[in-house]
Image (tube, rainbow, N blue to C red):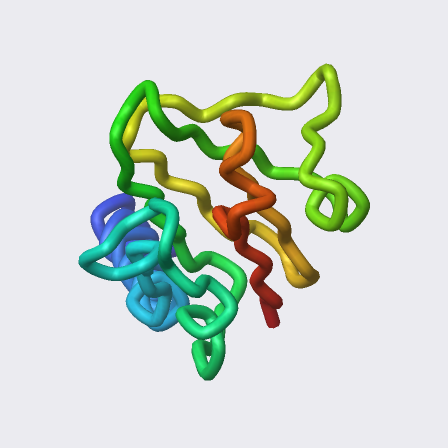
Amino acid sequence: MASPRTLLVAAAMAAVVGAAALLPAAASAKTYVVGDDAGWDTGVDYDAWARGKKFKVGDTLVFRYSTPEHDVVQVDARGYDECVAPDNAVLLTSGNDHVVLGQAGRFFFICDTEGECSSGLKLTVNVH
């Protein structure tokens, strides 16, 4: 039978190997500042900003903007097209909001401040 010390060393090695296996996924996650230096503001073409980017599960979108002029709301496709947030929508208002893309699919974000979304302050991303 193995000694307690041998078992402890084996358990520690297994933990290190297990943690190391997780590193590539965590290391490959990217953080994207929406709109780059312009941030989340009117006058930015967010379709052009997102074009060519390969969003993956685990990546983070950072929305930087002036408060209270702007906010961020995640909506569905209809909310995106019609620039309408549902009554139960979670309004992000910090001016430095981090949204982790936790699953594959299409995600939609708008500014709920009156007139901002219809002026182009909205974003859709495809996550792979």
